[in-house]
Amino acid sequence: SEPPHGWPEDGRNKLAYCVTDIPPWYLCIFLGTQHYLTAFGGIIAVPLILSQGLCLQHDSLTQSHLISTIFFVSGLCTLLQVTFGVRLPILQGGTFTLLLPTMALLSMPEWACPAWTQNASLVNASSPEFIHVWQSRMQTIQGSIMVGSMFQVLVGFSGLIGIFMRFIGPLTIAPTISLIGLSLYDSAGRSSGTHWGISVMTAALIVLFSQYLRHVAVPFPTYSKEKKLHTSWLYIFQIFPVLLGITLSWLICHLLTVCNVLPSNPTAYGYMARTDTKGDVIGQAPLFFFPYPGQWGVPSVSLAGVLGILAGVISSMIESVGDYHACARLAGAPPPPRHAINRGIGVEGLGCLLAGAWGTGNGTTSYSENVGALGITRVGSRMVIVAGGFLMMINGLFGKICAIFTTIPIPVIGGMFLVMFGVITAAGVSNLQYADMNSSRNIFIFGFSMFCGLVIPNWITKNPTAIATGIVELDQVLQVLLTTSMFVGGFMGFLFDNTIPGTKRERGITAWNKVHEDDPITTMESRKVYDLPFNLTERFTSSSWVRYIPFCPSYTSSELVSPENSDSLSSIREDERPNVTPIIISVSP
Image (cartoon, rainbow, N blue to C red; front, side, top):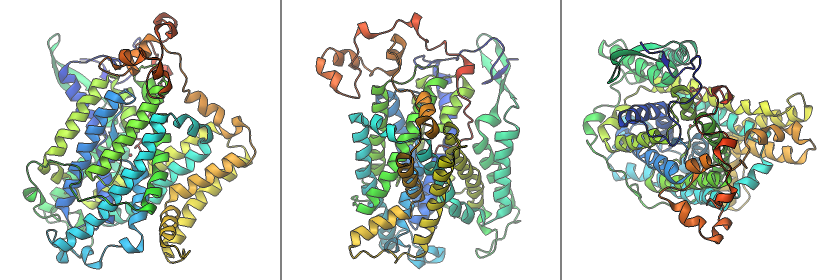
């Protein structure tokens, strides 16, 4: 039998496939499916949370359409990023950084869901009144995301992201990301509270698989021309902990439903753990569903929504820059040059624009958990991510498949949230490793930022009429911004970190810049990875004016360093790559 796949071996420190390699087609499909399933939990969580603010709790069919749309757009944006963006094997999907300001917008008094939409017996999903209730909200979200995403497009393609990163350090990023997880505790509590037993079981299974069994290899029968039928060992628990935990809990809930162990009375505690609460949503769902731009109506724009989305966009950009560098190291590629980072951020902005136009109610960003999966599979080929992107698009076209996802019991989703949001919070705090936390200055900035990020939004939410400037539009803007925890905490961290005296070493800027170095030496290997496709680089570099375009490669052959004097794609040592744990859920999921 073969040694366990995806784990370092004695004498082996190279990737099986590097960024520019093309594995066999069947391996691309298999590993592409793996990346798609790895991102499953983060992607599906977005529409399920968003449906609460859209008053869609009792309209499972529309929820399935939202899931179809976000899968389709995530696949499309993945293909754009890998082909024209940063060109690294990095998957795109829905983001919690935009979900937070969106939920803050929908929590405003004028967008509060009518009482009758909270009663399943009173909801007629096909009635014009109900359709207007949720589509008017979706149209406002769409327009706000589309306008807000233009800022990301501008920052990316203009090269301004480099200037932004000079003023943003660990003490700004840590409270911003941490507060995303902390502020979603209410959503996790509501879902888990429908049946704490099932929720705790789901969370326990995910923890068991991701932490305790992650080094346990499972034998699988494999066939190859060379070795015929043989056994391969896979670290299945480390690769799919969330998917396995959800699936097992889902199956247990189904068995408890069939055996009538769970109550059948809709008002009884534990009813929401049943798998038949959504009725015949699978039968009602069409076999094929084709998402298209403007499918929920013409988008409208809210100034408050746009400014709230901007706070999320900035957070997403900062996280993505870090993801690019981590992905490059794990995929055995040279550090991404400035033009590749600029293109990556710009294409992510275009992805958010497309997500807004299609009506996902969210944007797209790079997925950190899929970056971690690269280190496990030891396959850094971008063709694998291309296969994963196509699979997501195809999945989004099958309406009945996405309808199946809506039958996941609410307490199972709640158990997933318990782990997911906790890890997001910890991922934010981990950025403090670059700063000197023995400094009273840094302790004050982080502590005060976190506390304000919790207190101010909580008070504004409980006192929605407290903001009364006399200008309705200004009231709405302040309401959204001050109820968005990550904006309050991030702004406080940014303000104090850039005004209170402190050395770059103390602030963590020195260590941060060392890790996220953005001016690598240009090599032939770098050109293979980051140059534009279809020989566009050769066409562009023949013109002198290209050097003034921030997202275009502008070097000449004399500027290149020979591969012998630099790290090649396949020579980056395993022990030089960061240890990225696959359970970490991208916030940006």
